Length: 433
Image (tube, rainbow, N blue to C red; front, side, top):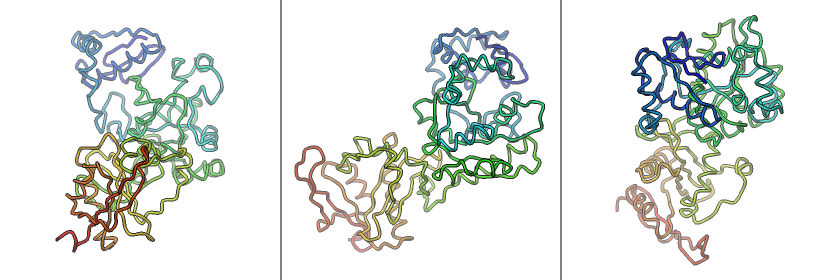
């Protein structure tokens, strides 16, 4: 495909040409170069050559350098807002925390009753080539491989509604039904791809129970959709009155509502980490953490169950919270205090990429403070197995002291040898001795 880089009104693929419009042409940013390189790599993945066309020699030199040295642009961070030519978003740019996929009511019924968001190939049972041929006269005229993916736009963008409206371009504005996801959550999906055109897309299917943040539905569709929504998804579906808003105003309203819906209750914070409300959308990361060898070693056991069974578990702890990094909003693990009928025992789970960074000690201290000051537990226990030096140091830093009376004999989960889970205790009296 040809990529024509110039002072276009907007960045768009039309009639087999990718018209790319740098924000400050004839200058180009490293992030824009990164997008062009992603497009080049995606086209190569599907056996297509890319022809870059630009009258500005410095831009061509920058593109060729990135192709030869991809490491120079691969780590360029995504900003909170992307400003581009032709952007119709009322926030004067595309906000990157959320992405969405828009559909009409007919497709939404199928999605909600199946619990899956599917690519056009999966929905229609046709090949990508067949679908591309059928849509050859549409406004978008997408390449065949696009139909193998679920495509997304940024959370406050109006493009999704225009795609839904493209089947009836002469009709009045009728909002689509928006399926919202956190961008960072979709990065965990094994089928995610960057093609240098869409913000992200995912191949084949997405299980909504794993990833869906919210589904925003114009309330005129409620009677036609409500009965199709699976019970486990009902809390994620929100019906919003359109009240005659145009496409830009509607998009802004939906996004503002989404941000409010996504706010988690915060139990306690120290400015670096916060302990926040658990949500069902956390289950996938929690389950995968239990499959991690480091977690199994730390808890002397292997968690043997399917993800489907894991989702149906009852959380019986007197307190259970997720650990959030305030500067990035990333969820990096969880803490939990044993059920009310037991001695209060604090446990922590830090996801593998965030270990050995000091987060465990900060989060454990926060949970201890919350247990003492808010839950009024009076004392708090924590167990650790021999050899787990990191956890032993963490307990010591957080003011816990050994409590041999609480030691529990166990069998090693692999060797079967006798081992002891060593108990420690935190209480105002014990910790000050």
